[in-house]
Length: 341
Ligand code: ISE
Image 1: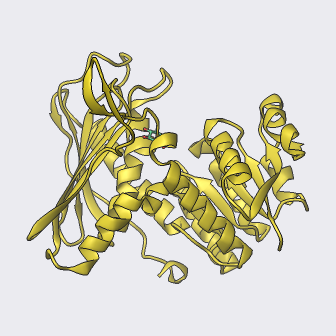
Image 2: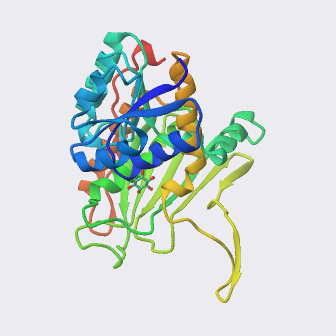
């Protein structure tokens, strides 16, 4: 296959960022079709590329011009398109979350098992970030012993008014949920959501910040500060504590600025910039793998597992007192199917 013909479903910000990298930064693939309910948005992306325009994911997936599919719509509408891709035997890279309910994730797992082939990759791009990858290597090397604690900070400059308290968990903290499962190579077994004093810098309806506290099978304690109206920038930090050492991933340092405000590193303002290299690695590897008829990246099982932890965290959050914490809720997963072992 000379070039992988990729159909994009969802012509919003994330979809357009993927088009930009596929067309201008990565080799091996091109956008052959774009679908969006908003046909003008689809046309704006597709026309300069000579790509076809569809108003539904179904038509795009069925099209002979599409070898593989990239889904960048909202999580709650992912399920039918992901299942159609599986049934059509087409590889699909689906942005996170795989789906927003456990039932939808289970339906995807069932469809994939019926096909007997892993076709779904979930867009958990942090697995491709150089810093997180180094951290995983340090832990695996074993020189510092095993992990006991991990501290995470997930800070966004602001979020729009339609972002809900649920999104703080199912759209934002889901990144740490996945990254921690991958980093520690074990499942999260319980989760609690703490609710500190809220920032005044938020829409009234939003509970912000929150802290997730999670425990893994071996007892590692993970905390995750989710703080999405921090104003100053997009800031992701992670500190892994092992028995005899720590590994710390700070803010990505970009250029160094010296001006009236002092000496400082520039700080980016969005995940699209902060994880640019990781997104490129993720999509580049996916293109190469699909061309070789191989699966790459996180699986539908990883998407399912993250959503089960999200549901448990939402339950804890719903029971949290105004100031204080919700109860520790057990994470109950089905047994891992053979296909994902
Ligand atoms: C957004 O959807 C993302 O995926 C970003 O990585 C995250 O930082 C942000 O909070 C989410 O809303």
